[in-house]
Length: 593
Figure 1 (cartoon, rainbow, N blue to C red):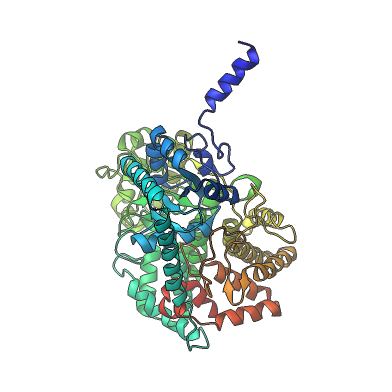
Figure 2: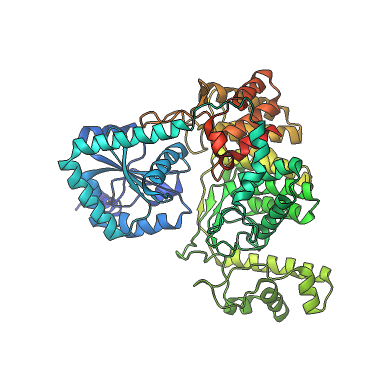
């Protein structure tokens, strides 16, 4: 065989499973690049192919740091039998939810309504006409295989009825949601804002902090709104709840004791065991919450937590182009969930001297029985004063010993362990991050170079007409990108005196209103390919501050008469959604104060 044919044969053998996602700029999509599934990206070509071949679309949505997304890849998408069924009978589309947040939101709503719960991996079968038919989250391989077989049979024999069913479900869901968009008699948002504190306290866990009684998500938009609005309402119980929650989040399992930074949520109601992924948006919003709390309650420890989180962002989540990456994985490079953050006594004894080990075990209770297979997570077990009393040494010395201990363990962790990183540089998330550094600049002038470089990165995504969604492609940003970048640049301009940042922030905000606000309703994406969905008068918070609230805040900061008038019009457009779900629209309600 000729040499070039040998090389060609090797190339095809090595790339036998390569699909459209190979070498994708999204690390999550690139992970699926060698699946035997013929993955396509979400876009017109995939939908046209489904129509031409009269096949159901299988849309699978996930993200890089999602543990169960990786499990389903290993169990199902790497399986040749599963791939054969998908390739033969479906048009398979893999989506990074952080690159397609509006599609993700639309399908999450569908699965939430039809199944009662939703999450990731999110798997939805869609008709060639673009109507969701059935959806689920994680499915074990055998179950998934059976679903693929049964649904294919039904599609081939009952296509007309299934298409009608999907269209009917979509119409029903839209009608249900549109009822919430009906105007009500209220002429101002102010009365709703005044009721928010009492409403939020109905969801509050006053014993452990946080909202709800099961898994604990930070729910930062709701906490931040409660902090702002209670500054006026002066509800003592709300103040006690906020201080309890802020302390629990900073001292228990949601917070990384060594490097700083917060995990996405804890799997228990006591804030003890985190789901170990670290998201950029969590760590961008937490400093904003803690800085405000530090001022409101005159609490230096909150300010320290905020500054430590900014330092964590600089140390652990800074990527190329002086911007910040999307996330750190929940699993380490060996596939161990939490493995990067957990400690065994045997390893601690090798790293620490006797005095250091004693402090670590007392302060963090690390010599308890292993809670997870990889060891235990450092969690504060006592105060500095309690530890000083137990060790019979001055509190100032204990504080210094703990700082040294943290540095030593962090250095060892960085040298001996690897955490996979989602290196995407997202416009909206970096807008939030710039706002955090803007707030920190009030206290620490040394943050200015970091903020200046990040502001320049964001300004480079704006070409005078269009804001790009990320640094890796030229796709236009969503409403969230426009709103968060405008807000971040506006906050930076005000904090640092950067007039150019304010000018560009104003231009982006003006363009956002023109592109995304039509007939008193918001459009969240410039390129939605599904049939038209609900027209939203207002956008609820998620884990993130809503895009609507961010754009309104940026517009008010601009002091441009045209933009401030738009804000007034929006805040006077009161719909049933606002009246019936104060908790869900926390950020919007807090703007008026």
